[in-house]
Image (tube, rainbow, N blue to C red; front, side, top):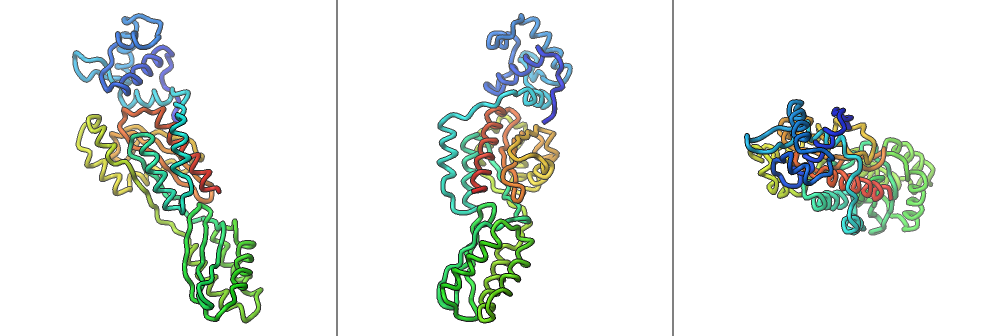
Length: 344
């Protein structure tokens, strides 16, 4: 996150107070109101002078001649840079995270629950990027006999995703063979990334009795297909109606913003810019900092989640008049909890 540009401590205090009030009320803020609401320790005249300097430096502006001041995008950025402590989640919010994400079945279920939860917690539109599995690892394999010549392969990946596939076996096999081969697969493949899987499977098949190799080879081929690297990017979005709730905060039509989120290219570009961000570190992009033109009116709060082998980003999109401290806290908490779930 960029460092503070505003060197004068009192003016920084005045700016933060003004931004806080504007976020809370959506009304232009006057110097008298700042003095009454905040313990600034100076007179309204001094605050007016500070506000004049802040306006000249581009941190605030006056929307109408008779109105108070409102923050610019630069003012919001300075405010975010000065947030020393995020708002703690309430006990109810913490419980909601734990309850809502309890016992998900697979990766798709986890992603769906997470993005809906984040939208509910923040009251903004939430987005989540599915973890890339180009370097996915394999956690557990089960072989379930369906008939003497058919089996079901169940695979749990390193990111918690569950995949399954039926395989027709070229020869009839005993259920004990499937159990034994599953034990060998887990012993030699669990924890490995998919790139090393073909070599390991070839070695395991060769180590078997000749009569067992055809069935084992069929299972190995199906397993490789299940764990084939997926490089396509997928994003889920929830809380569309939250954008409409804040429509007065946007200068124009919401259509271009909604279209950008639906097409996902702008979000993928934004996520790519923060590719090297440490897991669970919160990033905030305000207005024009979102290089995609359609997102130039919004604020985006994101965080990475997951593990080095399978990580991605989640976040919220809302107006620049966003409760940044609360949104940043929720995004960080959900990212942290999601990382724990995927590491199980």
